[in-house]
Image (cartoon, rainbow, N blue to C red; front, side):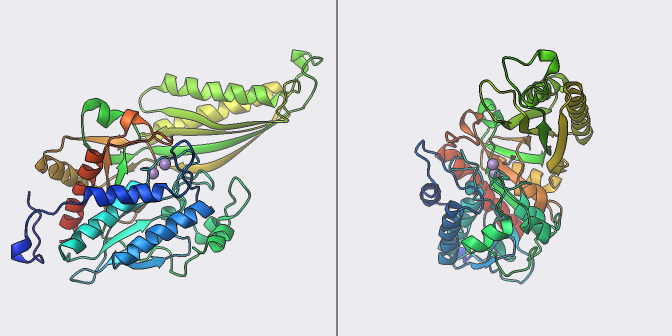
Length: 420
Ligand code: GLV
Ligand code: MN
Ligand code: MN
């Protein structure tokens, strides 16, 4: 393996590897913050738990000698100086989680970045370009939509003011919550510009494990469309109201939910559809629901197909609501087109993995990631490692230590190459 650097003294030019135990210790310590009784983690964006997680990671960044800054949307960027001034090679991810999160989604990318820095510090290696480790605000989008918000603002895809005014599921705004937890930073969003961005992440799907691969060279991220439907009908007595006279919001919501599923099955390919949130009001056994609120998450690697799925879903929702005599409102919560990562970086990941005797394959990402936003401003790519059973956004999320080590070593090697 050729990991030698011009700046490493000759007598210490053995290959560089990360320290697996140190990485695991940090993953475990961070997972204690917001730990849930079932072994999972709940650190929804900008809650007290997120603040405590941020404080810990910022402390680690400072202990590693990094220059830490916080921008106005709460993104935290930590820089390690290079031999030359210039744009940094950046890695990172997010440390917010969904309500039923595990230990690895996002956290791995940030803590593997810190482990890369720690390993370089151990050997006093100085790269030519600066290195940066970042964690971006509200990647998950579970509390505030859209997802990937911090990185979206970073690349100029959403005005800061609009992001700060965004209300979450509990009616708080991003701006209020950033100020409350002390992460409304003073730095201008979007600084520094980035030479290249690399993100290590768990696959969150079944492919690598099922096919016996250790490393995924991610070619791109599929498109995402999140829609919230509000349905207003009329409450009435469940026993006395004839079927033909009902204006049943619950029924319309159920029809939309089953249509979304049918649509994805029918379209095939990479089309997926999920109704992850559905609430009825007044939500009582013997009262026809007058109000339903629901979300539909549609994704596809192909933009044309994703548009077709949206059009068919929206038309079905309109027709079904009209036939039942209920009022339908529709709001887009997130809409991102599919993204291709830089082909030369995808090739580099493959080459590094092969050189390290790690089975590698290319694959698309089913989940959204900060890397898809950074791809708008610099060459970007992602390294995946297997998720046991393909399980994620679930407290049982797990990646074997050897796979974490492999992924972090590929990250280290790639960052060294890109920084020279
Ligand atoms: C973010 O994790 C998403 O893909 O929903
Ligand atoms: Mn993630
Ligand atoms: Mn996630």
